[in-house]
Amino acid sequence: MTISARELVSHWAHQEAERTAVLLPNESVSYASLHKSIAERAAILKQLGIRPGAQVALSFPNSIEFIIWLFAIFESDLVACPLDPKLSSPEVQQLLDRGEIDCLAGVAPGTMTHWHQLDSLPDASGHLWCRSTDVQTCKTVTGAVLRQFTSGSTGQAKHILRTDKQLTEDYSHFCTHLDLHKTERFLGVAPFYHAFGALGLLASLSLGATIIPMPRFFPGELLAAACLYQPTMLLASPPIIELLGRCLLGENEDKAFANLRYCICSTGRLSDSASNAFTTRYHVPVSVLYGSSETLSATIDLDPGFESNRVGKPFPGVEFRIFDDVGGILKAGDIGRIGLQSPAACTQYAQSDKALVCIDDFILLGDRGYSDQSGNLYVLGRDDQINIGGYKVDRTEIEIAIRENLPVSYVAVLPYHRAGQPALRAVVEADPEEVTVAMITRTCKDHLANYKVPARIEIYPRLPRDENGKVLVAKLDSDEVGSTSKEQNV
Amino acid sequence: MSTNNIRARCLAILGSFLVNPGELEKVNQGASLLDFSSLDSLSMVNLVVQLEIEFAVRLDADELDTVLATLDSLTDYLEKNSGGQA
Image 1 (tube, rainbow over the protein chains, first blue to last red):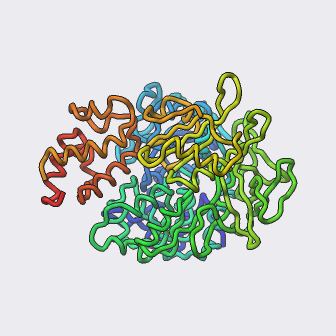
Image 2 (cartoon, rainbow over the protein chains, first blue to last red):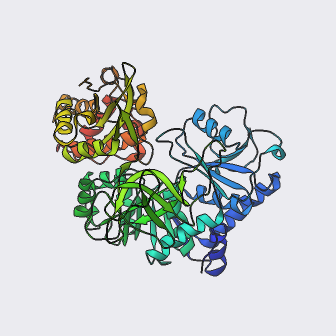
């Protein structure tokens, strides 16, 4: 039986009222109690007179407040727009302006002083702010329950209006494929505002299971929570897996994940070393999940033995194809452009000036990879080719050569102009004491044709990353990268 | 382990996180560790993990605003909580 996203909490509040929906440090919140809070909040929203279809941004860390606001917005026929609560006020303002979002639920909106507080809720609930004193002027959208934002790691964030049906498909195929039950306990550390964290939250609620929201990530706190609550499900980004694999362990914390059925990692590339360290320490394999804001969850790797590029097989109802540069379908083993088709996928971006790239209803996300004979998908990197002196250069090939031969945590090959001509620049995250420009140059010359050797190489101990650990590629052209780099014009 | 030794080891770790010119110098002169753009939220977690590993001390996340206020407060905390093991 599939329950629609908007009705998840109300369904279990009626079916099994006393089941535990949310576990907090000092409280166990039942589905009935949670629904009561949601209904009270929804009543406030309705009383304020906000029209159906109006958008309400949510700015909360993972918390019961996030859940109450999200479902109160759903029950009021409004559209929820979850934001990263760590965004600066100017960043929030930009997202709200571009999305024509006129209401914000959260703490005081910082420098957005012209916004008007609408409610008189207790402080712990956050507050509701509106761009105007007249809520009737709020812009509305139709057919959507959620507005999500892509990471913006490769440029400006794109907006996606999500239907209830797409969300429902996402958590339904996830729960079915993994054979999840109402007895699951989800450790909610992946940010709820992001598609991956939202998947965990909605999956838990769809099952009538229990979620433990973690408002922030520090390994010690997470391990303490895991020891206490003995979760069966952990959805985590690569940096979380990596840090859990090497952090200081307290007594018995190596048993923190003794009851985990699945540790699922997504939002970026997980290294062999990070996966191996986690598994060695906690005796739990890490399963990589591949997807995107556009397609939601698409594939999951449940095969034994970790392979860093393998992202597994599609969820039920999802298909992938590998395309060549002119749209032809490639066979297993051939490297090409990855296309995904899913009933959970969006059909367009919210902004009219942005278009999904598709071939035959398969969305091209800009990744390059191949499939094997077993039907597993492998993702090699971004699908970007640069024209260098008449040669078409596959950036992924250069990145793989560097990544697989040197101890780097990240590498991006980017175009730049040298004396007016296109050239290649490698931006590398590594310990400058361990990896030098000369070593990178030598590696490239040993594995690649001369014209593929980057003309400029920059090594940084740390690159700017978002909350999920994804490198903010759009910032690699700016001064925000930091200045302790080593450069050389080869 | 002496205060100077702990301080030196902290500075060595901080040096790999505070990547903009002059930041480490400012920390050494008493600036707050929480005020630098190099330390985004993920870097902060990494820093905490590095310090915990180096000194075998679990830092209380609820006390980080106090502990990381300055290099002196960090050094004091580590000296008190390492039990001589640092």
